[in-house]
Length: 195
Image 1 (tube, rainbow, N blue to C red):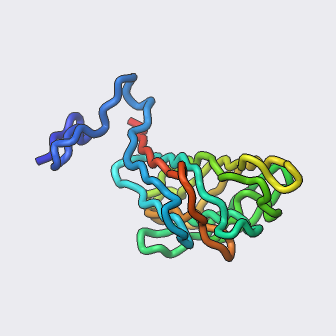
Image 2 (image 1 turned 90 degrees about the vertical axis):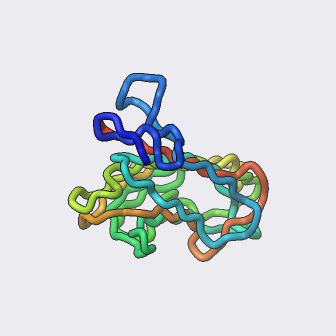
């Protein structure tokens, strides 16, 4: 049986401590999961958002497209059943700027070659994802270690859900490609409550 303090679960049904931090209340992120990637070629990386949190953060280090071909990074905010939701978003990168409304967001603004690139990394913060009455919002940054012609790519993106609905899943993908293999790739999911 879970134990709650002021309505917040502090010991779950499996006797794990949850929602406990050494700092002041409300100013921390709880690590919810840590997943190692790169063991096999996959078409997408899906992260299920944990209920009970007002904000989620995903820190990631993602493999390149399989075969190293030029593909855009795609971000999909979806229902828990995997249906992509429409977001109005803006992306500014070291190569271009874009504003659009899409269910499959090309969020790094770069589709050049990947010679010399080792991985993509960044952080994605999602607000009110599991609310069905408040529009989900996100802020993200994405960068790579090295790019075509020895250039680096850095991008910042933010978006607003067009119609309020619960966003239960985040999908990272490449437009028309799959994630390759390798080591030291991961994502970590964190949760935060406003109270």
